[in-house]
Length: 261
Image: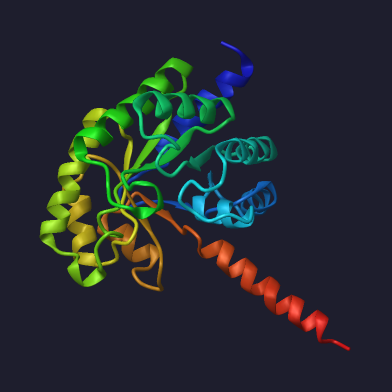
């Protein structure tokens, strides 16, 4: 095994170990090499891209509108610029078929990622894959990882909570999420990502019954990271929030400079 591959395997194994229920991995999502280096210098344990931020930073919209070759080129620059494990948000895998997903995941690993996010929402949010179809797609991702020899962390994102308004989040929806979670785990997923879920009681219920470590995305002041840790969350991510904050600061700075005379 080559030195490069050895290092990638070590990073992948390390990334898996960071997912601890009650002691969550904190991921400040980045969008390019510069932001990745900044977050590394801030003391991060790992680097995670966010598809929305990457797309918008390239002048595109989320929903697989950014051409996949650009996603890969951007990923390569990030993985070359930092020493930390890198996980890439590849939305729905940039392909519906099993063969497309498998090929694309292999390319992502070849470009230095040791983890991926892959969602069960159809591109542009137009409905969701059935459990049966998503299981096949996740299985293809795991098969791709095994062929590369890298123990890829597959963060299986379910969009159930984004497809329903917050007031519709209830025990029935948690049951549906757990049904998907168990099927995804059997297909080879490493974690469950539930963007949109903010209700603390429901998060705790999910964490108590999920066979996979749970990833929650922070979208408001509460639940706080400390509260999420107490609920049993194993991974906390920030999605588009860092990009939006940086761009707002840039806008304010730009205005102050341009109106200084």
